[in-house]
Length: 202
Image (cartoon, rainbow, N blue to C red; front, side):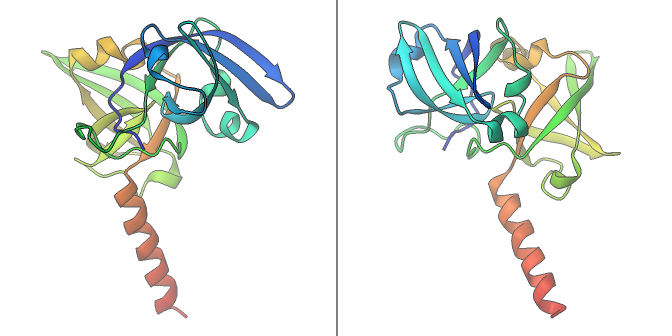
């Protein structure tokens, strides 16, 4: 379980194919010293397991399922990624509950800046349209954000300068893929509604 508050920016130093999987090695200054082999780490919002530690680098094996369902398969050596260690019971919950289970990959559509009001727009995959609501929570590449608006097959978020500086979001270009994870509460509500609708028609 994570909070969506990025703790460090890492840089991919190695991307090594291993059959259908990929070994990703990520350099994360200071961050690596806190992790242990077997730990979970959110990498661009995708929960991965640390399989090797060497100095300030962490290695992860990314299986085909994760490569197909996230933007990690599109990442290349030199790309930056958002990193977060899992939530401890004593930590403050500054963001929202993030599982590290990516629901869909969306596209960054562009941004607007009106006198410091910076808004980023993203496409909204059909599988998430019932889970994304105005003022609700969403994780974009592992960053906990509040939905500012939902319209026309897309949604927007408002970003502060700090978030743009300390995460990968400030480096996005139109068309770039991003990982989306909808709010866990919205998922359960939608599942219950679907179950009740199915029961009513039976």
